[in-house]
Image 1 (cartoon, rainbow, N blue to C red):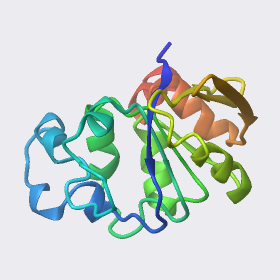
Image 2 (cartoon, rainbow, N blue to C red):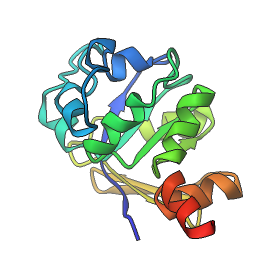
Image 3 (tube, one colour):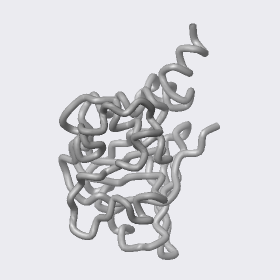
Image 4 (cartoon, helix red, strand yellow):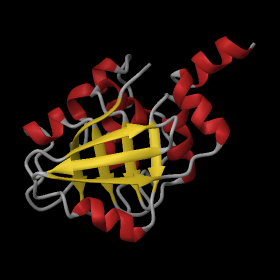
Length: 175
């Protein structure tokens, strides 16, 4: 079974849109792999480096509200997929982005603001990491010698999509 989690990248802003996730000028690329070097290229945050080790090593993104807003392009989850991102955790997601994540077999986890704030308390830890158990609907964040576990909700269908590896694998197994 696919492992969900790993080093965390904290993007402390609401309304991160799909053009910041993968700029529109790259939507003509032929394969998902061709998108890989352009992850978060246009995202402007103090101290953020889209080519830095924190970005390149990240397997989980933690952010604020309305993540993935803007255009409904599938390329946004695809660039995460080819870069090894297995989960995005935020207060809320744009509806189509969220469903595209599940369709690609990645976890889009919504948590209330107080739980997101708790996760952001780990953002200063160089070793901040999140493990996600989609089956049990729990996640554990660790860093700086501390650890916290939280539960989350996901619909049975979306959970089945993620556990199957995405929509295509789910359909292959069902039909």
